[in-house]
Amino acid sequence: MALHGCTIAEMLKAVLLSMVLISAVGVRAATVNLSGTVTQECFYTGFPPVPPEGSVFTQTFTGTNITATCPAGYIAPAVSGSISAAADTLSTRVTMTNSAEGLVHDTFQGSIADLFLATGGSGSGKVEFTLDYNWSACQDDFSTNESAAFSFNGAIAWSDSGSRGHHCEDLPLDHHSTLVIDEPITYGIPFTWEEDTSLNGGSEGVYGASISLGVSAALLSGGQLVAIPEPAAPWTCAVALLGIAMYGRRRQAQNV
Image (tube, rainbow, N blue to C red; front, side, top):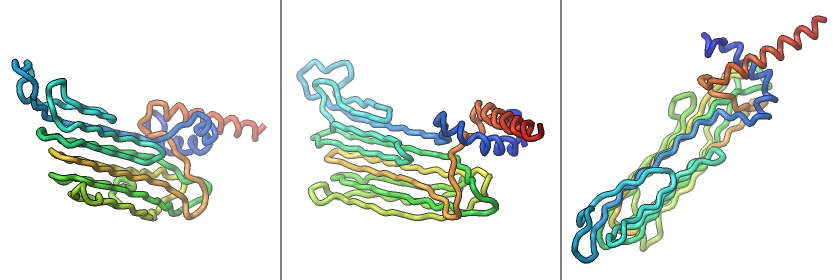
């Protein structure tokens, strides 16, 4: 099988021989996808005449860091929400202030996918993933739907979800857990992992929710974990061919 003109065997050989180069240019295989949507219903409370938008209208905001407010003369719950990814951790937080009228709905989703190679050994091995999982929920009127999942080589290894809510006047619901998952690997064969989180909810009252999932990995069987480029990356073969060229020159020098 060939990828962009080179075989998998050649690519893996090149990656192994080009580890120093890859590290030097800061190559990471991580693919990050983040999205957020907030829909807000605004009610007009000013003096006549009613603006062209009407006495009630709905507006939608999208992005990864959202602050939703209505125009002057309109009221609705003021909402702020964000989702971010840093150091293999997904974090989402949404807060909303109280308002006499107006509905708000929000959805934030994120994923981080990474591609790694185990080096410094041969045959079968084992990698250990440590998951740091947190969520909280505080809502007066409706529940918050939160979910998180971790996948290894395309198969879900762990997941959690729930419809959560608690009166904000009381202590909010909070949860923290650390999970350890061991998976088999083969030295020299790439493997993938992915983490996903989702948060959505809506309210007319006070509302606050958050969710985060962090992942770290370590080889239990010795050696090193190396982040490698996605096979579909346009420059993968360039790096691979450079590694092959370096390998060929070294072989020629040894034969002289």
